[in-house]
Length: 459
Image 1 (tube, one colour):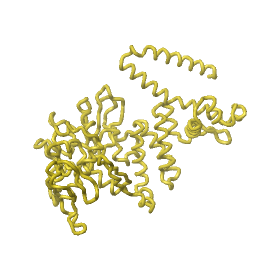
Image 2 (tube, rainbow, N blue to C red; image 1 turned 30 degrees about the horizontal axis):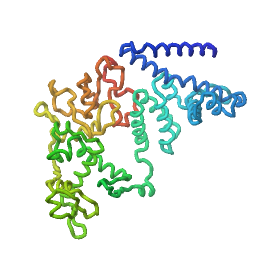
Image 3 (tube, rainbow, N blue to C red; image 1 turned 90 degrees about the vertical axis):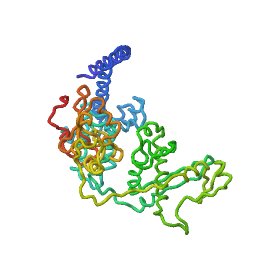
Image 4 (spheres, rainbow, N blue to C red; image 1 turned 30 degrees about the vertical axis):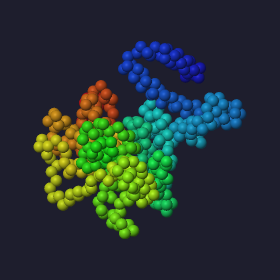
């Protein structure tokens, strides 16, 4: 094809775009979605010709380009930024075809990524994540073979994940390749801190800091429990701080996630203080010490002053004083843990939940990154349809994904993994299982764990 022929095709595409923009208001919704998908594939494949064009210009004399360099030409001729021009040149070097000094054709440096882009299966966001992972996150000792394998794996899983899911999967893959992580340094240890800022005029204080891995791991289960909707809500007459919140309390909980985490830390600190396990400090039991006057207490107005020097509004002081003690019950020395309950009960037992944490580790719907702490136990065969509360018929699912089953999705456990089967009209051959919580499975053949004996679209 001559250049003039390709330019003529581009003219035709321009005319089609103008006509589509003028008439798309009358199209059916399904047709709009189909056109949008086709445009996305076209957008993803467009850089393939750009790589070749830039590669062709890269060998030209700068004087013939009308600029001092290839980047200078792209900046002024295409009216793009210098950074964007540099990115496109780098893409061409990584994903475009190459030639040896003898003229022999060579595959792109990132051959698998280039192939996926040429098929329109990945976009620029996917490509940039793959670049960043290979360049900045692979361990320094990674050899060429391991690097090639990592690029193959990333390109393969990118074809089934959106960019956010790919980023999460890439981070998990790096942990798999380097499970010990980088060597800890004194500098990292020195960076950990927590700063309670000065109390402002409205009584609020800013909390800033950096948590080390141990502190974060300690906080995660605490927040998963106490920061759930309906838990530790100061707007409730009797806030739920133990057990599970009433469904009505969860529905009327209008707090943001950040507000729930704040209230969870308040409840956790109060429970720790009430436990009496902190001993003494300067001869006094570790507790909140606040001073006020009888008159202020009777009026319920004014502020108290704590032993830390902060001001505590009287309403908050009265609320704190009204709370009962809370205790943590620890159950141990279990010798028999029932995992198969049949139809004798609908709610999963504590033992079953522990086993599901080990089996599933998090939400089982493909692409979901919600950890087990935040998941519900789901009957793979719905209880209303005769499903049993047996460990082989249970799985973990976050709340939003669990409700997807009301939209026609079905689940079942095959070879130890929960398979999510979409309704027929949404079945495009997407993955059936979630590998995010089991990163070692990223090294298996793409789709190996999704083979449940059915062809895509048959569910």
